[in-house]
Amino acid sequence: MGFNTTALIPSTCASLDAVTAKLSVVYLYFFLFPFALLLNGLAAWVSLHLRSTSTFIVYLKNLVAADLLLTLTLPPRAASMLPKAATWLGLKAFDCRFSSTIFYTCLYTSITLMGLISLDRFFKIVRPCGKLLGQNVVFSLVMSALVWVVLFGGTLIPTIILTDQLPVNVTEDFCMSMKSPAGVTLHKYVVVCMEALFWLVSILIVFCYICITMKVLQSFRNSGSNNSRGKKKTKLRVFLILLVFFLCFGPLHIMRIPYTLNEVFDIDACDEAWVITVHEFVLWLSTTNACLDPFLYICLCREYRDKLVDMMKARGICVRLYSDERDEK
Image (cartoon, rainbow, N blue to C red; front, side, top):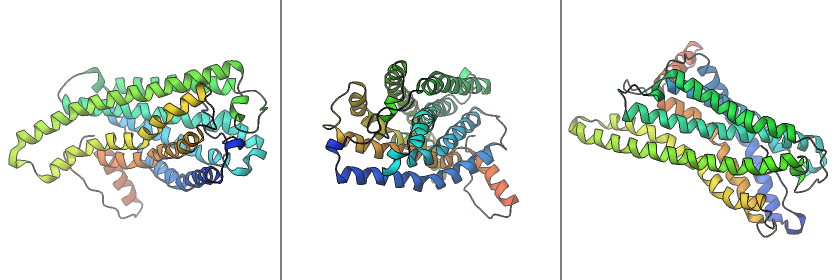
């Protein structure tokens, strides 16, 4: 998919501040990697011991896989952004063709899966006794497989295949110079389609949580004085998905509007150098989602939480996570 975000700011408009900001992002990636690897490795360990008995667990397992794969792309991606990386053409070429492409594909896989999880929460809370298709485990398996096939088969593999040229530009257009003419065309369509995908998923999530909010408020009113503070916290936990989604991905896609205009329509990069710099920071912010998702699993899935506690206790690790019998799986 390779959006060329590792591009250097053109030398004619480069400044010490821009170079420093870029280097700061590199250090942030290296700082984030061990935490993301630890948390997602632990999440993968737990999820492998869970049976796919509910739609939420199916989506959870797929989200763990996407986040773990994204985490593994962080070191080569960060290394390719180092100041001396311009002389490491093999590393930069590897990043352009493989690691950055996988990084973005996993990012949008996570975004889509979080949309499906929000839809699942909608069905569980708004229609808890229904027999809708979306509440069927087979449906969740099909939808998860479809996400991987479309994003990896429709964007990742074609991009890798069409990024097969010897780089002729070692400055700002390094990644784009590795693409064939068909690859450049595909790249422009992909960046626009992925931007559209995010906003479509956002609309879906907003709709789901408007309905969930109305249902929760109605539940609070109907419960009267019998509703304890703890029960309210349990019901409100579901909104953590909404918070994490827009905190991590919102700034990136707001910033991608001017960035995409700069990239697709060839606006003067010198006039928009600040767009590139800020874009690097919000792109790093989006990767923090890989660290936050494991905490969502603990908050939203009792089966995951119980399995985590049991597995840690079995290895002599003392741990206590809050539990609520009324949590939804």
